[in-house]
Length: 151
Image 1 (cartoon, rainbow, N blue to C red):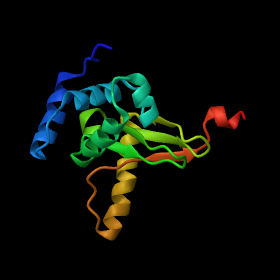
Image 2 (image 1 turned 90 degrees about the vertical axis):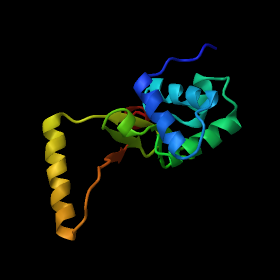
Image 3 (image 1 turned 180 degrees about the horizontal axis):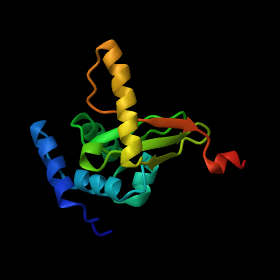
Image 4 (image 1 turned 135 degrees about the vertical axis):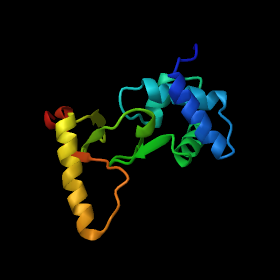
């Protein structure tokens, strides 16, 4: 399977993050980043392996842990047995998640600038009341996806 091309800026940023942690940006890690970049939303390890069967399963587990530790990957825990993984927002774009409580599926969604500003304002008010400094926010909506709702 030929390597998937990834965004050069993302590639450079992941490389820098790994270098700062005295880690190498190996071919396997590059392929893993490419799969996450081209995936349609957060992916399970099973989905990652299906997208690039040349990746050894044990390496995927190890590399996801390292990429998460350096801040290149975000792990999304759901109610099912499978965590999902995606590139960190600072590498892609700010977004939120719809998480199905029944099947564990995770879908990304974004708010328009006006709604995002309104949400930021409401969250800042809460933080101000308790003396909390916000770096960023993440919004996960829990519920039932259309597939499970029809079941």
